[in-house]
Length: 155
Image 1 (cartoon, rainbow, N blue to C red):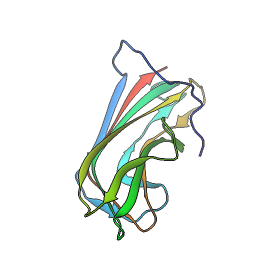
Image 2: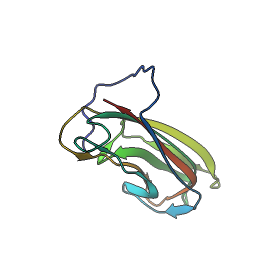
Image 3: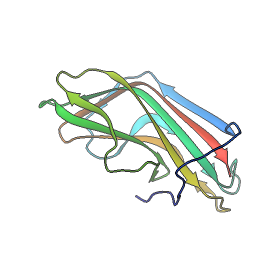
């Protein structure tokens, strides 16, 4: 995995996004996934370059969901983040903790915001936004009633 080659740490804009795209699902999904796995349905087709809505873009993704982490030892985490293409969005870290198992498993609402910058380029490129999740070894990740929103700021 490589990260977008951006030094962007802040953005001030006085304009609305060029596009806002949304996808959501009410379906409950639970699985034991100890490797980065796409959350079913939580993706938005995005492209940059020739033939795309823009040659480059800054994307701001907001993901909100009811989530659950469960583990027999009642001590585990479920990680979640947004990838653009195969690149994780910023902030990037080794700790993408979204929900924690403590005591009896209980559904709770969580939200995260991620940003990716792709400089203008002529070559067409698929930068589809995907929510990816993984759970601690032996843990089960659960998601329901989620929304993925992506705002596109053309460059």
